[in-house]
Length: 573
Ligand code: FES
Image (cartoon, rainbow, N blue to C red; front, side, top):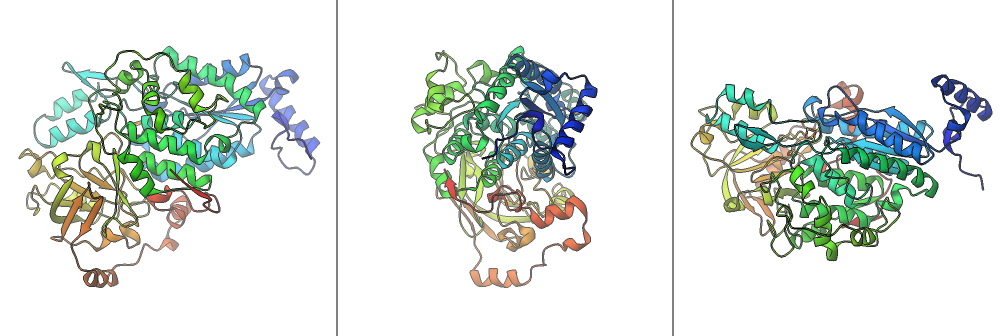
């Protein structure tokens, strides 16, 4: 059996003579001042996702410095390398459109360059998932370190934070409750420090799921970006990466279907972002694991929401950290978790929970018996309008709207919505159901976070705060409302939303998990025959064309079909 190559001997550039390749590689890297001793150490790659366009990653340079220190203290050689960095507000047309590009780039750079283990520094919404997708495919030892949440800020004495309050203030502005001058003032304090969104949005959801599935050291998910603890965590992760390289503890040994089920359990218990399920499906798909949506829904029914955090509750991420981070949540959920799962520490999740610091009094994480919300934070809907299974974050919905029948008001695209939603002549009433289509993975493209359809201005001004809203889009984890998302197949490829007409009657019944379009099957069949065929990709070029031709639907994680494993071997949860 050939011995696996280590350090600088790995992944040699192919010149047809491996010894020449190594000699040349050494000659070049020595130009950076390395000694022979340094080059003979285990090599630990560190992804550099710093970007002037990414304030959520503002602290990446310090984190890298701390991680390098940890690697060197443990006898390894840290080598940073750049990858794409994605920030939600600086990614046209959407960050989701680019997530797979980041996953591909990270994967190929991990394959192309010599590294015995890798430290993945992510944070903003799509970066962590992209890195885990890459790690799952390459399967070299990998450890996740996130940049951590931002601090909360204040506005005129009121505590605020991105981005649940961003949406609330914007809704107030649309309703005429605050003026443009105050909006300007608010932008100075909504994001008071570097780091990821300070509520349980997608970034924090993914961070908590990553810790729960064992790919991050305990306690790492919630440490605020600006605290010294964040750097200490990175230093320890650096040391651990060197040990991982020696132990050959690879992601596939950690991200088993049981570990992914733990991540899904945490997603539900933290009232996490609906994006969490899409990203987990993509990561799982890389490992040949499918998501069993009915089982996920059943898991939701027995998993209460335990944390009192925005957007489902009142607190911010820095409060969750002070309350113990993920520790009190894991402690409460212990009987429902798969405790035998191996984690990045080399110990099982059960052992890690046994090692948690002693609990103390706090009011951010509730007990299992007195939750914030029971009955599942995310519900999976069936019915003729839900296609392969739409989802709703019921913990962030208006209770009175969870069973509702209304008249459809249809928008054909995100552009159509923005053109007409505030038209004073729009035929729309409080009890109607707003439907937006062609905002799925291919339709938009990139499945934008446009599912948070704004309340039409004329209704907002009358004090209407929520309506039933349905789309094939996603929604930011920081948003709230009675919003049905991820209807699949999307309208752009002939999914059920494509068949809805203005004035149709729609029923949402969350307790029964139903989304029904009250139109006969004969009529639906007739409408199907009139649909315009999906966009012709032959006129597209580059990444856009690749995306259109290969992106999968929401339930498969919107990964590219050729990047997922060749076959689904098993399902989770
Ligand atoms: Fe980066 Fe919210 S915009 S985490």
